[in-house]
Amino acid sequence: MQIIHHIKELRQAVRDARASRRELTVGFVPTMGYLHQGHASLLEAARKQCDLVVLSIFVNPLQFGPNEDLARYPRDEERDLAVAKATGTDIVFFPSVEEMYPQPTKTIVSVSGVSERLCGASRPGHFDGVATVVTKLFNIVQPDYAFFGMKDAQQIAVIQQMVNDLNIPVEIVPCKIVREEDGLALSSRNVYLQPEEREQALVLSSALKMAEEFVKGHQGPLKASELQDAVKRHIAQSPLAEIDYADILAYPTLEPVIDLRSVPEFIIALAVKFGKTRLIDNTIIRW
Image (cartoon, rainbow, N blue to C red; front, side, top):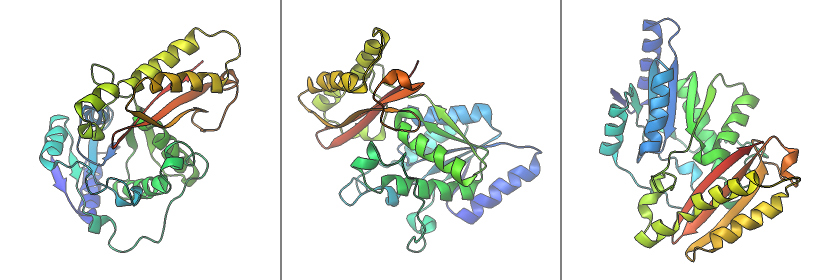
């Protein structure tokens, strides 16, 4: 496993790999580190599908707002490299902020529409930062496939729209959410949760399960507002839960919808704070 810190060196390593094997496929997993089993599942999927697997670990300052947790975002390089090695990763790209942004960035990639609701409304500028750094990483690595977890389904929708609009030659591979045995979606931010907050955070997955059962047992037209109210009532049973949003939108357009049966699939997307920790979760329902 190669550990590379500089863009020039990474580009050369990928070029050398492509030169050594005809029709070699490159799989790419971009992360912000503090890797858990969810990230490992992305690397495993890339390993199964691709000849060369590249992992990037970079806490991207462009996607953090002024009052967000950039400085305290969890980091553990030794742990990250152990996960990478265990999953058969070929190259770990570990750039510094100075390497990625050697001068103030004057070019920002902005994906309108799909980035403006959910986390985009709660975290202004967040998806501009995501789209910009992912574009840079795609240009650096030039992968054939890029693997992203569905826990951040809006991020996948934004990146897929960006790839389509800009004709970036990479196939986006969505991968299912990985959960703890009790249902909590894996997240690097789970480490912030106090024991009582951790216990009450299970209301997210139980609200989604309740919503799925609600839809499954419902006959005839189904208003998004009706389902949304049911989800919010369920979450409100947890006294520590502070709802940022609990929205139901068409997917992947993320457009509002009145009758859920009027669209082929829709997302139930949640963002809820427990103490100082903001967690997201979702489920996508296809008729």
